[in-house]
Image (cartoon, rainbow over all chains, first blue to last red; front, side):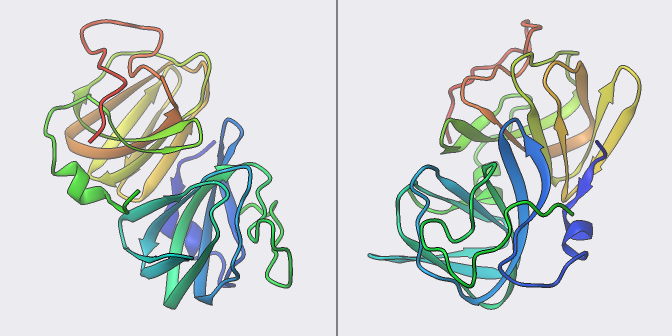
Length: 119
Length: 119
């Protein structure tokens, strides 16, 4: 494989809430996603999920609190915990999770995206 | 857990080649490490290893080529592949790999660091 430049990869797509796979690490995948506005409440019952903000600012709402992540900040949402990502303005994020995870977790709907798109 | 600010965590230690765990993702760990000069040739026979440059510039030498990583660039070294990280000047890196990985892999020696230090 070649090295991966995160900002170069991020320049290759513009749609929101549609994670793109950029690499695999054993049975895990590294994904980039652009987000804006509110996502749906969901959980991933089988896995934790890592969020790292590459550019911008986002929030992750939980049922009992909300955390705010700025550039260079990360958070691991524990498996089974309901959460809702939100960004007032466009925010660019790296996600790390096992291969096959669906973005809307247990709450499939119109925001459910393909989990197999590479850039 | 609280959110993690990478630069804040990086300000908490100064020694080289001594990875610090900042978070876990299922059975994987997210580590930060500062590097300078050459490491030892080694491989990890059971796992891939992700390098992401947070600040600075590094190289990863392989037996047949060398790649250079700048800030915001990443590379996944495949399992079993001999490699040697190098940085002319201090470079700050995020590593992601399964819990329990030893920094010098199959080549234990004086640069072998504890694999269980959290910051």
